[in-house]
Image 1 (spheres, rainbow over the protein chains, first blue to last red):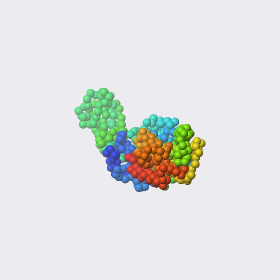
Image 2: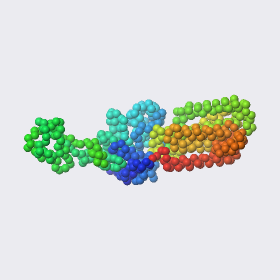
Image 3: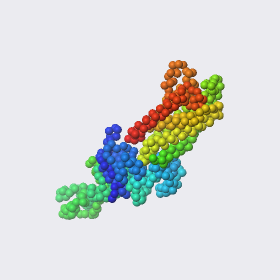
Image 4: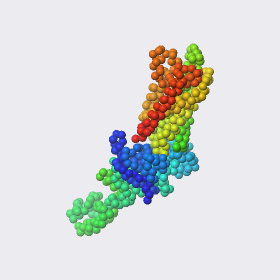
Length: 307
Length: 253
């Protein structure tokens, strides 16, 4: 698939000598949803702020649709929409006017019917003549999305779209993001909610302390880096593990009534057959078996801890 | 050139004026009317003619300049500082718009607002004193040049300010005293000799006298020197804004 954003060896050192990004190289494919995942202060916002022209990079280069973000800033910026993390809006302005203002800033002729469509799609049409300070937090976030879409961008950056948003609105937001992708917009979102990345992203890029730790398809990442756990429920509680089972990675749970076994599902020898055979030989009676796949959250925590 | 962006910024700023009509229009009109009532009618009645005109008429160019300078600076400084304060400056920085286009939008709107206020002040003055403008085109030229120059100066202040206090420091602590001590209510030759010499270091003296010359054909300073000093200050403001914008100081990191 064609790359729409290419980041090459991007670094940023702020005036206070803090290095927010360290040599980041990343390609973002057209029409995908990619989640930049990382803890607070990882460098996610700095990265998108550089691409959007708000922060000046120290070194490296970025192209959007093969245009350089500095030399061809007019072309690249007209392709990009940005939804910032903060609810940065002028509180006394009216919704319709404010969204139209953003379209003008991006060099587009006024188009009231397009603004109407965007506001209707985001359930804001009833609020078009309301002042922004009369809106709820969720509505303000949707106004920010409407502003970012007002000039019909092909790449949309969403910086922490679910920050401070309730569960219902978060689901609604995810649907909006999926619909946008289906309409041909490439979505780059930063988040520290792993659940969010798992739910909507095609690919995940994990960033920590300014470094890119891993980039992969969300499902492949879970498969390749995730572990599986076999939960074995016993008929009778055990006090200690029989010596024959000590060679396995087992943990006794639930006051001796359960045993968990961690294994790598991608390896040829999972050890499950021999474990069950050895359990039979030691006389342990099985009541039930269950398997669990480790989540993206487990993988993320492990990656960040290692880093 | 991104004309739609310039238009958007300009109209957006003019809309702020509409929303704050009391602060933008009524406040300067009321305060200037009070000056005319107190200085022009009450005190002015006891003062003989200056430069061949009544005291009430004499103070019109100075009060006009006082309003233009303070309005231009505060309109423009607030115009760029407010989006910085709310964080909404991000969309101007992320838009495909050059620094020049941003400046034209913000400064153009600020200068327009000041010009509107200036014209209203002149109309207000005509209710209190006999108004006579000998060189109307020169007066209009100086009016526009002053609005543009000090809007640029205000834009620079807004860019460099990090809080509301810094935003107010220059207009209140520097500009207002310079205007009051710049011959807006008196002629320089009314001062003791020592203070006359000191006054020539006050740049506002040249602006007020330029404006006064356009009204009455008489002033303390040669009109050519006045115009040159105003153009010089305009160039200094353009250079200052260009440097600050190119470094991204105050808005970009």
